[in-house]
Image (tube, rainbow, N blue to C red):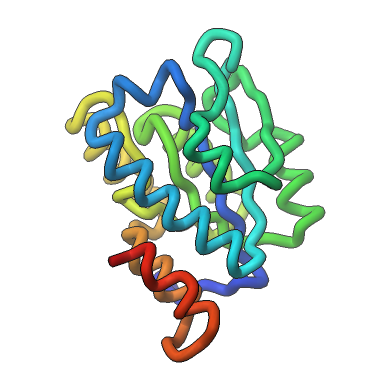
Length: 182
């Protein structure tokens, strides 16, 4: 059943290609970065592991500092294929025993789409916070989301993911994290 409750024990945050030379061209980049930060802080606080991918960092630069600062312990996986779903990523997912992959980053219609398609084909549950992915052009972003939804990815928003992972108010975790969504 789609849109089941997310599990802290099964979830992993996958940040795709939020890189120094690519990000400036992304439509609505400020909001995307803010929402990636919300999800990164949430993952850190709730002990949900994160992985970061970088598409050809020699050409596109490294992951932007704002993301690296929020995910200081995340392993960075370099790639030259558009899909991040390679043997190295699959091994990381198996070793961490994670089946619910929360995918954020750029570009929605290229690397995010191809990674999501491949993860779905391997049987993973894939969650796309629509406000934490982006493309250079709005039409490509919309098309990327539509293609991923048609393949079976679950299209959420960052706050829905945030509150679903927290589950309840009146906890220390909630009090610590609530200010980031205000």
